Image (tube, rainbow over all chains, first blue to last red):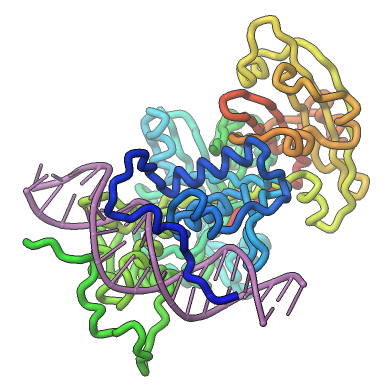
Length: 250
Length: 250
DNA sequence: AAGTGGTCTAGACCACTAA
DNA sequence: TAGTGGTCTAGACCACTTA
């Protein structure tokens, strides 16, 4: 078959010509249309839907518009796309959930509470095995361990233990962190190009229980954050939240 | 000033003409370029970067390409964009973390373990206040409560308690859920158009402790999932994970 | 070899919003 | 009112993958 341009049927809709039943075809409307037809079971999970080309003709819009809509649906896990094969309705809607990880200051102020911060300890010491591995430190090198406490209306909201890669942070002074949390100091002074989060539940112990003002063993939601600048690990933070805390996504 | 077309300096690069120093300008390369200049502190947090127009001219590509790159950066929270104002380097890198929430079957098989599933209880009963609110049930209406257990290599991996909106699921039979978990049955039989996740830590209790084979009070990572079809709440599930479980994002 | 999605381009118009 | 990002379009070429 001869090679055809991407579009062929738009000639019925001359671009400058206002049409009495002119439809606004935004990529959002194409996305909504496709979602509705999936919802209505016109295309079943696992099935191929029409090509971009066909949808563009059917909906009377450019292929790029269909592409944008289907790309968004693929990003949400609603459809799966493969070259030469086509676009399928996802057989198993492996949903993705996006969590906002704001600065603690904003997280607390967003609840309407007054933000408070305290550094409870600062030491230069040998890292635990976990911290050494996380920061990729050479054997025998020391690191900085900071413990902090965040308050909402004066009550503990979260506490954290942060290991910092001392070699990568020559300019950091202890007193910098007395008013500014490590995460914020880092964001202002370094380009953090990569991050990784791990979420788990564990029992409060030691300083964590003390700083959160909960009994030892209380279940606490824990977030581990690992930050890099390019290939260099900068910080390994563990944040502990009081048991009533929730991470919400939509 | 007279209205100008979006692009004006491309005439130096006639499209068909292969250039000896021809640069491939993909939107990914534009994104990388912008990120690098942010990393190098050419533009500081909070500052405006050049307009799409200017970047397109400077990089020798179409504005649409710059737009795509900057849109991706905005989606990641690296920059913030506002019409008429321009594009700023985000002052506070409010990172977003995306979690994959696959079917339990895939989550377990992805670890290399053998998947197992059991329904441990099924009853039609009055919902708890939480469940009633979550499913927006009328006062006095009953709902379906299912408890299940997921096994990895025969050992408990996760257990869940699922409340289902009975009125919205006339076709559901008890025996359907003896081999297929509720989440999977729903995905196959209904279009779940909206979902919400809540993550918290709590102590294991009752059936949860039994089904996970952990002592009462053990910290368990809990995920609450609420699913809708359009505006109708369908299911309210709480999934409990053994303490060694981790949610990872990158 | 051929069919599908992925992307780039030049141009245009629109939507929002600060001045 | 004017300047910025947001989007659409028609066309084209490319990349990947199945057959």
